[in-house]
Amino acid sequence: MNRLATIFALGLASVVFAARADALQDATAAIHRKDWPTAVRLLEPLAKAGHAVAQWRLGLLYYHGHGVRESDHAAREWFEKAARQGLAEAQFELANMVIYGLAEVPAGEDPARAAAQWYFEAAMQGHAQAQYSLGILFLTGSGVQVSAEQATKWIGRAAAQGHADAQAYMKARTAAR
Image 1 (tube, rainbow, N blue to C red):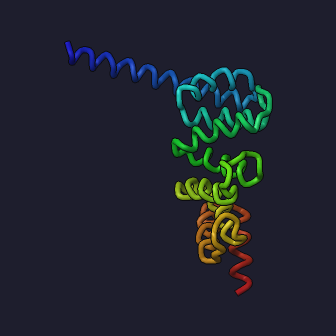
Image 2: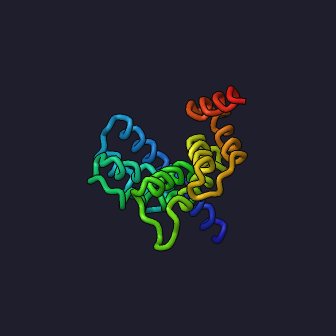
Image 3: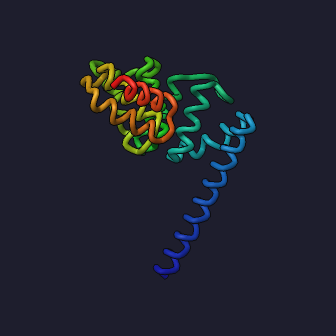
């Protein structure tokens, strides 16, 4: 009987996983069609259940006010939930909100440092825009120590992935030598 219960549980889990994948695909298709109400309706239950991609996408809808009232607060909450699960896209969006003053950080915490930490998390996963943004922080010393070496490292990684601004920086840097 115990083996039968295990088989049943695995079967049920695979059905639930498939349903979530279908709902996420349907929500993504709704976003591409700009059918915001459908996207929100499909994403909300997934996001509330802890699905990181759904949380990130729902955060984007709140950030832009698509299908919901625009809310930096709600966007930040959804981005942070997904970011804490390790989703690079959400880590990047959260870093942007923090660095541009759209999301508060705890009292006494340096927003630029908090943003740098989120950029770093996303950059380590190969997120090109986060790599470039982190490199810029190293150039300016915002939230990190000024380091031309670290700036070149991160901007170079973004350039290697085809990031246009990073490529332009690396080309100008090489020409200046």
